[in-house]
Amino acid sequence: MKEQKTNKERFLDWTFYQIYPRSFYDANGDGIGDLRGVEKKLDHLQALGVNAVWLSPCYKSPNCDNGYDVSDYRDIMDEFGTLDDWTRLKNALHERGIKLIMDFVANHTSSEHFWFQEAKKSRDNPYHDYYIWAEKPLNNWRSTFGGSAWEYNEATNEYYLHSFAVGQPDLNWENPKVRKEMQEIVDFWVELGVDGFRCDVLDHISKDFQADKRYDGPRLHEYIRELFDRDGVRHIFVIGECQSDESGVCELCGKDRGELTTIFQFEHVRQSAQSKFIPFRFDLNRFRDVLVKWQAFTAKNELLYTLFTDNHDQPFLLSLIQPPKALRYEAATMLGAAVYLLKGIPFIYQGQEFGAVNSYFDDIDDFNDIETHNYYRARKATTDKKTLMEEINFGSRDNSRRPMAWTANKAENFGFTTGKPWLAPPTQAKNVNLETDRRAERSVFRFYQDLLRLRKESVAIRRGAFCDLTEIQNSFVFSRATDNERIFVVCNFEKAQNISLPVKNARLILCNYAARKNDPFNEAFAPYEIAVYQNRP
Image (cartoon, rainbow, N blue to C red):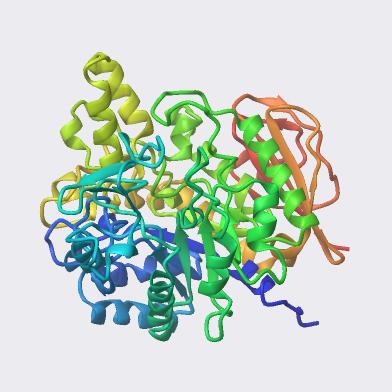
């Protein structure tokens, strides 16, 4: 019987791979990843088993914040290629049945954008009201990257708002001309064939200047509906980067709201209330509890959930849980099973498919990220260098932005470029790379292939009901079920222990310890061991 799918449910068949183009693959030898480089590696994506790509910003940009400072929304960054290269890539992806979504940076532009170059000239300039100005700072808001969020502009004797870098002035969404410009940018890319957008800090576009926070302003939902609840764009996939609680998620993504398909919910990966740079030990039990909470909540409210562990804005989760090196494969595959066998839309970040880990550098010059450099400058006078570099190495966004390690050949920059890489390669690339992993007896890549193949083949995993069956701490046991199939997933955390199996008469279909294949129902689980069982009536 053919599955009946609603418009939203069809997205449960999508499995995303996020590409940070600057660091993915360099096709022309200038040391910077590019669109032709992405095109050359499409066999890898197809072999992995994904059918959708999220491409991080590739628009024209001076790269104050690596592409999240856009100077022209309708053209491609010089280092990445041309609009023709983008069209070639889009066509090549679609020919392979792979969807493409773009980053949409709506809260701010680059200070080098034509609009801001005009806006800063005088208060009478037609573009002045495209941005947020005040004769004195309206509040004590701080930039996400450090310092005041208000910057003085001498020509107009005013301050402009920048929620992020000084080179990223916030747009004034109260101005209907700005909203019209943004709608036309969305339409431009949809007409070129894009399948959707990941919307960067979308909850910032409406402001309440009397509030302590810079997001979730009073007109947020109105602005989002103006963008996406229109003829010609309602069919696309739209995911927001939004800092929303349960009620906020319902308002942004609820049925018939006309706003977003889904959002990224970060509660499961952001456990520390301190600065992201202050080291802490990641708690897998808390991680599990948050995942269970959101599985139940999204099911009850008929919402779509996003499944991810990593992205371009945070260090690799595999390093945060601190497994011994000898258990990297087991820990990486356990995380994969614990997350990607849940109900939702999977997002895999480049490098994750071979167990990429964080790096360690002794010098701040080995880092590029503006947030990292600002943190270093703010702390260097009061913190000893050893402690400060430990903090930098722990929390820097550059951990996940370093060039992709395709091979084990250091002399060839691990297969990323024939030139000098724009950023130093990962310090563990000699041992942790795609080539070495694919040749290994215990291959993270092959496990991910099996995992994604299982998702594709199993209706229960893609659409089935979730039930938490966990009975003891330091484990995660759950089932996914339809009328015709039940999947049982058993994940053990870092210490060996006995786990009571929820089923005795099912077929073992996936595991990460070879010994389990010979003794499928052994209740003794090794560190980071997983076992997946299938039961069909």
